[in-house]
Image 1 (tube, helix red, strand yellow):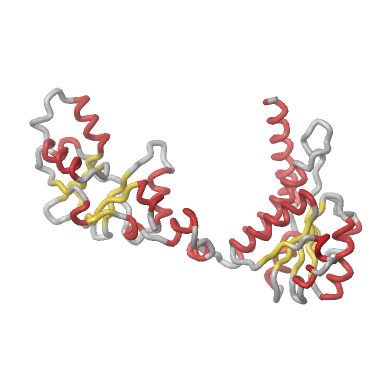
Image 2 (image 1 turned 45 degrees about the vertical axis):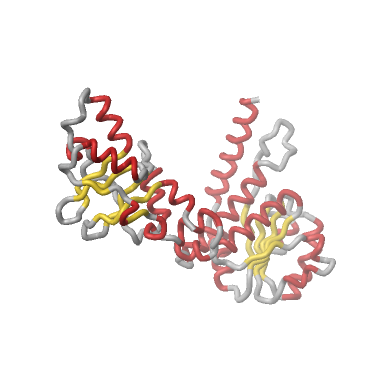
Length: 318
């Protein structure tokens, strides 16, 4: 079973790589057609191609390009009213001869909607009815009998993603824009909220001095259990950070910790984050490293220590 699964994934990966190699002027024309359109993007497809079309419409909406999915069979029973002059319709089909899509073409032409095809057969009847065609052909689906729309659906979806990302680049779509379209959910919060919205500051934080006895540090961290203590220099700048891990390592290294001070166990020059940084930036600082952090000191650009941000705070911020 494992070899069958790996063979399928390898087939899909090769199919996407070949689709990438085929990209050229037609792709640039498709992007330009969408950018110059006065209306929205409408996607359409049947079966697995319909799933790719739905996903493309959702991705376009999330990245600043108004889009909607149109079910081809329902379209000829009234839903075609969704399409207006100035729209761009993206037709997705493996065969290029999907009957429900072909029935739409004359009406789309009458309306004045431009047509982009993401087609597994670029020489098909549907291809001839499109203004631009992106080649989504595959040599093999990947299953033992070459029946299941696996590689073809993946390639069609990938080409749709490529269109969406190219449009993002052309429109200079920023993380702030992305956050505006995702007001709910963890991703949206991480983009919209700042470190200052989630951090602990003031009396919530265990503050200690470099010369404070380690026993005093332990007491402060026990009373205010944030997973770390900020070690402050005389001018209020961050001299170092002591985490729960630092305390455990000190206990392992020293039989008697009574003579130790904060400066003996603190981490000098710890990784810090600014209060105006997006939560997403703090999350990257904590997680995208071989040794992950669970807490970050928050420091102003001047060096003044303001507080602590825990990984838990990022996921519970409101």
